[in-house]
Length: 249
Image (cartoon, rainbow, N blue to C red):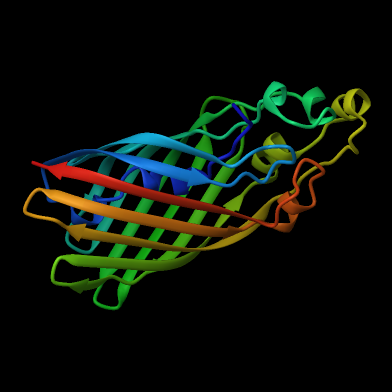
């Protein structure tokens, strides 16, 4: 298996493709397939199956790899405490390049913090501010996006644009190269700072009947200069595509 990377919000969105159609107090279960490109040198793109488990209640919710508790919820505002698993990592032994094999392993972590969504006729504002609670990266992330839904009969299309921010600790853990790693591998030492990565996304949901929904999600992310300049990286962008099928009850 090759080294691979998923963006936090991308995997959360892809694993909850039908969340925009969820009704209060309802469950939706299903399966999806995800394809993602990796920014790391010597790492292959990867496609894998992924389960979908969504629940949206008055006080709590579950969306794929995230769970949360609503502090404020009405038709326009949703403010919640959230915890989200970040399946983001680097496994040197699985890399194709010899020098990359001598770098340290980077593990996934759990990010927790606040998530807020505001819905109006002119669109949706979505934002989040999270921090590592397992002391792996000790990093912080933030996200801000604007989305506008289009509804036509059984089809819902939700395009959006946004930007995600990662602190220097977050970027340095996943893309920095320490002096000791540099001596072992011959790769130039690198300290990553904080940076913003803009993205564009599109989610499409088609109601096959009252219970079944088919979904497609795609996201294109332009990597920040702090990530692109890392000697571990040979890409300027990443792409995530997910397709899924869910049953709501």
